Length: 166
Image (cartoon, rainbow, N blue to C red; front, side, top):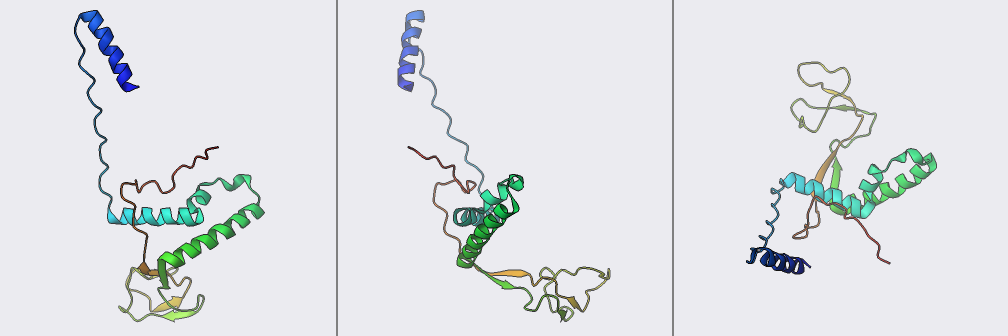
């Protein structure tokens, strides 16, 4: 079709001016996107995996106001179980502190990673407390195995649009 339009332009230009018009310049190649940071690539891969296996992004982006609590509860069960199974398959998680939530835990000063423990409540401005009630065990990734990205695909597309052809 493009060639036909170009041919008509050349014909009418020649008839009007007595000379052939120069052909249109080819379109400029698309500007490549900047390379992704490894953290962003990993985050997109994990988000895409949770979308493919559990439709997590669909669930999170849905306006739940129009649904009853029973409908939301049923959807949560399905999404939670599928997300859980995807994490079990691809990410090995372990608790930061292996203890019973609600029980008192004692921490040796300097014997814990400050990025792995957050103190809540009445915390002194100086130094770390020696212990307290464990409210959340925390999670640490021990191993992660994400499927490799397919070459040539835009990683930012975590879920392609779907069109059913009849």
